[in-house]
Length: 321
Ligand code: ADP
Ligand code: MG
View 1 (cartoon, rainbow, N blue to C red):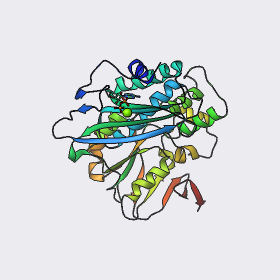
View 2 (view 1 turned 90 degrees about the horizontal axis):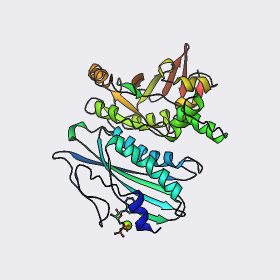
View 3 (view 1 turned 90 degrees about the vertical axis):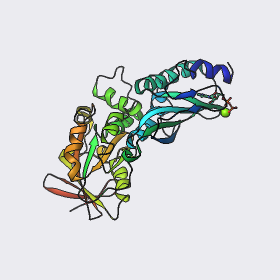
View 4 (view 1 turned 120 degrees about the horizontal axis):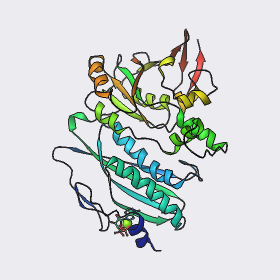
């Protein structure tokens, strides 16, 4: 099988997406954004052994390569539309390619995004996806703009992927996804991009970011978008899954929920006057959305719980007081 057969077999879906004037097969794609919308574009690379375990299931690698990019579009409040795939492969392994492309195409179909082009090269296993979406100019969510007094909301649950990675690295390989370990590992390998939440929050949240490096690190980026801001987090409010609670033996609320990466949840700063409208818009979002604290003028990030206040660094715990 040569490069062109490979593209035809695995990466040239027949269906032409809406707005795709010309897709895979020419020198470049021709795309038609809806009138009046901004084009939103992002790119993320996954390197084997760095961004996913070398032995991760290939369908999960296909899913995750697209999911992490869709998560960035969600964090901008965008509707996802198209993507490109640059694939660097050490060899042509058809079983791997079949599973990889099925994971990729399944998520693409679910989210109604069309593969419109890419590149295929030989080298150490590396997957780059560039995703494109649309948003009305006034609705785009940015990292900047949060202010003291804004409420902090987060989708889904925190820390699951970090616990999943720990289990995977310790050699746990659950047969199904039904037990807690299977659930946590699945959250690592197959993160769900929070598209509905991002769209619902567009125009209502004051700032937004997706949590790829851990809550504290990405909250830090949101706070950096304003002048000298800090935050108070409420330990009892941090959303934790039943599987997380079953597996986490840290002191509450758990290091993984604060600092663990790879969750791909969305974090929003919401102005007090928009809070009711925001809650209403997000109440039917499948992942749910939880208020975990608020933004302060004082630049520290503190965690309140159990009658104690802990000052946190942006990486994790610093000291108690
Ligand atoms: P060129 O040499 O003009 O860059 P390529 O041979 O790299 O063309 O690609 C031929 C066509 O196949 C292009 O439309 C390109 O977008 C598409 N393509 C290449 N690799 C992939 C891939 N991994 N997934 C999807 N489309 C791809
Ligand atoms: Mg090329």
